[in-house]
Image 1 (spheres, rainbow, N blue to C red):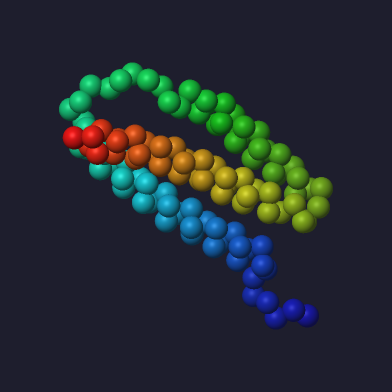
Image 2 (tube, rainbow, N blue to C red):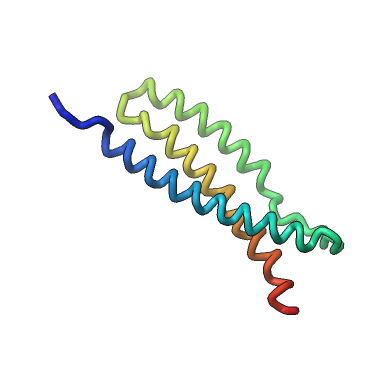
Length: 109
């Protein structure tokens, strides 16, 4: 019998999740500061997130596939957490783009 409390996959998922959480909070804070700083400026009206609806559909289909995949074998247990991490990473990348775009005008001043 193994004396391991948690599996290597669980530890890896936790470490990656913590990294994504730290990046998410960092970029969220930067994006919020940029939004507050530029709240009185007119919006350019450019939709930079036109594919977000498609991403949401992919996430829903992927989630249902992850639940189904577990029935095919216990090794596929980590498909669900991997999709959750990828979804959080995608939101983090959007926040990074928003933070960088709102920081760009202030650098030119």
